[in-house]
Image 1: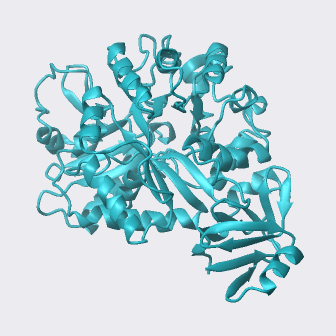
Image 2: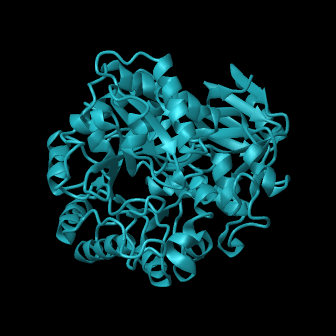
Length: 541
């Protein structure tokens, strides 16, 4: 199939603008002026053409880190994201309980609450959820997904007696008397494993619906952590679901799977199943290894080198208490040519991950992987310099500023904040910083992400003038991070992330030119057309 898109304002790459693209079989074969491209097609038969009507056209956005399948599951759950009080949470859940069938052991699942937005300013507890229902199991995931709260019936399902003092590990929260309070720290995915197993077709249906939603916001590629996202299903089940959809031509977004593997034993099982990084094609492929070194800043589970400024005695949660466990995993993956994307928010976690990466690079210098720190929020001058020297990526989420700018200083204090959320220093140091959203933590909306990266403001335009503007990026830089840098993270920079001959024909056409409007308006811009491989995956009606 041959197609021409003309009369556009097309950003082929940084500082290069054209007005037309010539596409054949999903690949760009020529770019240039309308006259040049239209003349090329005159002698060809069966060439379709589309007038872009002067609109801004950018390479397809590529979310470098999110939880695609997990986000899709939330489509069937109660949304607590807009609640302003615990009382409102109860109202939402009670209404959801009335409007849905919970026979046969089904759970009432909900997500998105944030105590920072509540009048009470405290975490949700099982006492709150027990007031909603004492019969149906209820799980309410915090916005960061590193904490959830469950009611008494669900505690019993996971083997915790809600009436007796808890003597086990600290992942179960307790009240002043040692009685479980329903708060679960850093074991949310494991808690979901107690759910009844859904039908096998559910994975594929969720992925199809999510692919459509991704196309609606201009995404043509994602890098997603999915292998432990569907209760009752293994990572193998998820991979095979993706492969079936890809083989049937039903994937409207390209997927690089960030394979969640947290131990050497899991890695060996992954290999025993015949999986290797890089397997697949441009539509679905196995990418980086994904693991965690800590929790989240909002939940005060991110691992800091020093105590939280607003919680003395607490330094967060260190996932790999045994550093050698992380070393064994990364040493093996690095040797085998598998890059690692490591969740680190606190400076303690970043220090651990960076030092292990440095060590495995020194042991196998011939292996040129692209390891990265996912989030990389609380950093230091030393960590930024070491990341740059080691070629470590920073998978960042500027949209986190929407919430974090209101609480980050209280969590870590002014001194530690100096090198935190510092997109500018990271970029200037030469660190590739592919943009992502960590959905469902934040919606996977590229315009929201770009808005936060260049304005430093929340969605209400606060603080006026922006938060720590010296750390922000230019609009050109932000677009590159969402396209070229994201392609680099998955070793696809030679055919994705720019609109040049030989590259895949993935692009999005916007309803307004973000380069000519006030930055404050960027969050309101939306796609009118999304194209993947030369085929339209979304057209606004």
